[in-house]
Length: 591
Image (cartoon, rainbow, N blue to C red; front, side):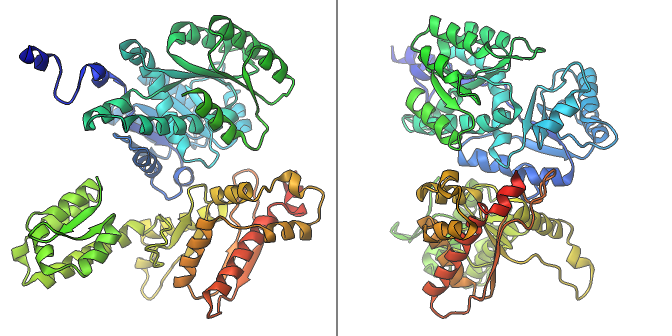
């Protein structure tokens, strides 16, 4: 009996997990990005196209982040495809030089078959104009870049889900959400929201895993997203997979067929079919026309106005309501703990004062390089692993070597990049840091791009006695502004009908998020020079609607000895810049 059981189940897996190892057979591993250097930089905001994917995959504890290869023109892309074989995904921007994006995609279809291709543009109007010149859209999907770095991850996951869901659901009953949407703008908004929530749900699920094998296998079985852009496809997917659907999110109006035009009652027809077959299936109808609320509620479906400023939160709430390595521990030779480091910066601090016995204890065991490899610090780990303890005259020389390598690695990682602001370790060594996780805005992105170019091409190194730098900057990202508005209940309705001074008064009386205030305090502990507080709007330096100069810029002397006084002045300046986004001048310009 015992021998038979061992033969049936591989180590680390029990009967409940059987079959999970075969899930997700299709993965996007190689991505070809066909875009200009600036477009590539814009998509990921520090100049290396794989960075946002690596960041998002790491943040969500996902493995196997795809590799991204960028080329500038359609001709270079075709040459790359001919020389290096099949890619799993091709991302294409509209401006490709002599050959249009459509012509390039059609040639890829002709020569290389069904490689998934996604057109990634800046606005729906220009995408529609580009596709109007062809009778058959050669792209699998089209998306509008809206400043959300998660869009790339969501696009990749959508393609994987579309390819894997039929297999995975048949294998072990993997679930999915059916999204019915034909609007490029809204699809580009929904996908990052959906996949963020899907991945968050996966993280909750894997905590129940009995061991690492279970946790990794559970990730493969996460809920999927399947997409329909027309009524015919929606009915087909629903009929095939209704037993494995968590729910439906549907537009109110979309084409009847893939090549058709939107019809007014397509959403009604589809939701009625869903509810007739499965009355209890959660359905969210979303529309820009409030008149559709009546029939949605009559069918016992939820309704969401696409024009609501709380779109993200509303979708997240619907899904929540309805879709149900570690630190380095320094030890003495006797095993007692003498220090702990959560990251390489803390390791640098601990190593500086670490007892010699502990330093040697870990060094002879190559434990420094082992820990660094686990944190993807591969080059640093290799440099440390290549040096033996016997290579150093004494322990202090070893300590100096480790500190120098850790510091250089930190500086190198920040060179030409946008560092996440960390109040515990901020020392102004990074040229540009960000507070928050939202978009940088156009002005800050422009500075970051210049910083990247200076680092990439070492422009200043080619001229003797010439030093070219970008002014050090800390960027407060857009999510902090959103949080400020929410926490203080400020909205369009709050400030409509009052003059600019009254708007400034409303914002001045409001409070910045506590974490932002503490980050600004940490910033002022290091920075004692005059400060320019400027806006960096999502619309500034945009392709089709330059917005520079519309919002406020304030200068602060930052000369007071009392840090609390300097902090009050800085917070007040930030709030006034925020207020300028609701000024009459800004609103008039937008209109």
